[in-house]
Amino acid sequence: MIYGLQIVGMLFALIMLYLTFLYYKRDSYGGRSFFIWFCVWLFFLLMVMFPETIYGIMETLSIQRTVDFFVIGGFLFFSIIIFYLYIVVKQTQRKVEMVVRKVALEKKSRK
Image 1 (cartoon, rainbow, N blue to C red):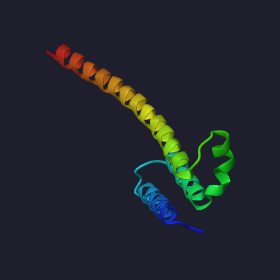
Image 2 (image 1 turned 90 degrees about the horizontal axis):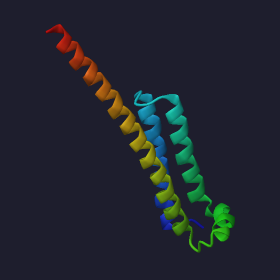
Image 3 (image 1 turned 180 degrees about the horizontal axis):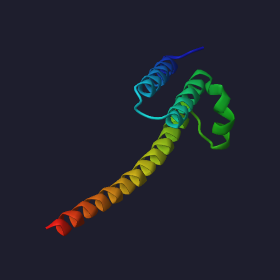
Image 4 (image 1 turned 135 degrees about the vertical axis):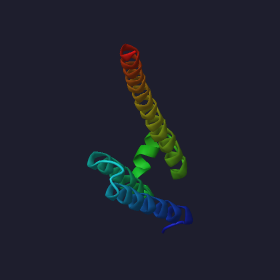
């Protein structure tokens, strides 16, 4: 039996799968990113459609409700994403600083 929250979860996953494909077609990101995000949303869709497949994991972790499992999993997933984005931003910041220094030194040497 499919419940209302499952329908909402399935619609969300399907919309995210569509947006992932749409932005890939618009060349917003490469094939590797497309594959990763497509797998993430497909996994989410399957878990929402068949929540009984994760009952063994839930029992091991002493989690009573499926929604609690998804909330905990979501927090973990997005914590990883935020950490990764922080690292990428710091790397980009260093690269921009190096370019700015190089341009400033070139300007100074021209004078």
